[in-house]
Length: 137
Image (cartoon, rainbow, N blue to C red; front, side, top):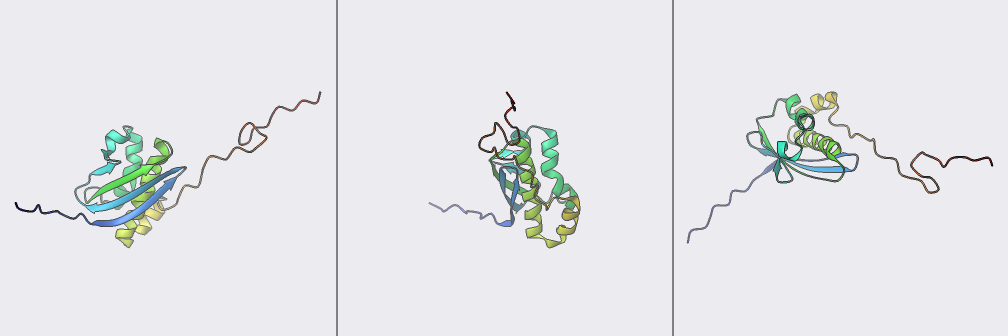
């Protein structure tokens, strides 16, 4: 019985993207432009054209949309946070592969992690900033 030839897939670049409470691990591979997120295609995972646009922004900026296949594992947060994390991770993976992409991605703002997160709820209060109603008597 003949052994099967196992083709080893080589990652060209790797990047970790974060936004809010979402974390995306992005793997850049040689290919023809397929984006797979958690084992599903981009349009079936997000379904929203705006979120798909956000994920593709670094590829459009660097004009590499048809050049690489992208494999993404994302967890945590909601859909908007996950899309932002994917965008950040794709930008980092592109720079890890080719440093020449850095100025364009930096100028577009894709290399910066969005620091906005939900403020924690403090003890003795009903919410992060809300206070209980004051009553003088």
